[in-house]
Length: 229
Image (cartoon, rainbow, N blue to C red):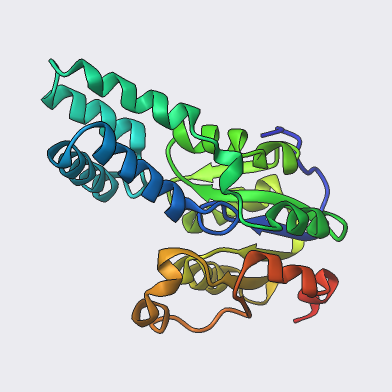
């Protein structure tokens, strides 16, 4: 990210989540799971995902490379394990952007400043964002935290604004940010990915200011009006 991303107060900053907001992470996850089954076997597949979930529970975010490293310690004599990371590095991330995702970002850029606000590790998540084309689309305006909803002061330091628009597929994050920024933020919930499908979990939180079925539906909205909600 550019150190001098924003030096003056902007009228509006659009903050976009990545996974299952702009990028179909559920499909990527399914592709990777299928690869493990086809390249290896059920035992490898099962053990890898168990380690993956253990690490996510420990760290609070997904760490694919960390899971590979831990699995390798268990299977130090299985040289085939070394191919797993190559599959992840070479994955065609640009093919997994949701339809009209870039067009929505460009529409927002005509109204205000845009930035990625993501959670994740310090290796794979930046790689995914870069290889998908999102890093370039956001002109280096990329923030990646462990728990982004707890880092809003730092977000404001990088991107000071009168008003924010947060587009995210996680109702928990939308509500947490709303509690902090109140009327200074408009929350947008795209009904994409596994979080949106968990209706009981979604119902635990107040509705977002705006809900759309797909990220591309935002092209039907006048972005300037989001500030006045």
